[in-house]
Length: 155
Ligand code: FES
Ligand code: FES
Image (cartoon, rainbow, N blue to C red):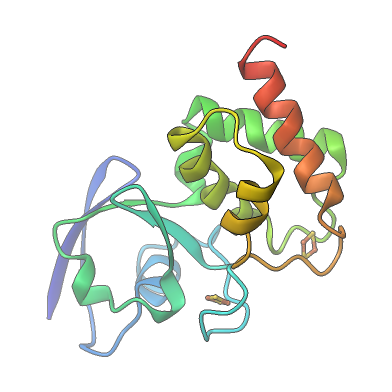
């Protein structure tokens, strides 16, 4: 079957198997390998992309369900002011170590900060509950978000 959607603002089309996941289509057919595959079970968040602005685990999302939708991947975050600010803050704060989890964190956080430009730590921890990082202990990631929020709000 064929699926048509928008990826990072550009139209995309792929021939897919009916059971194929969106993650597979992004990585294997469209060669957008910034989105990572970790658990493949919707538990780790490494595969997070935005669908119509909301974070989704693409490893458990049927590619066919993406028909007509707007997909954003971490590759698109380099063209997004907020995404760029977050990526720079992650590097500066030591929020990137092995980096495997980072695309999922960045995409989730872009969605969060688009909705609320100064979220509480509790809200952030809740929003990030589906994103697992085995390296940083999370405090550097929260530091990176705080730096991003402060920078963007002129504090
Ligand atoms: S690879 Fe999708 S949630 Fe882990
Ligand atoms: S930086 Fe290694 S898993 Fe997060």
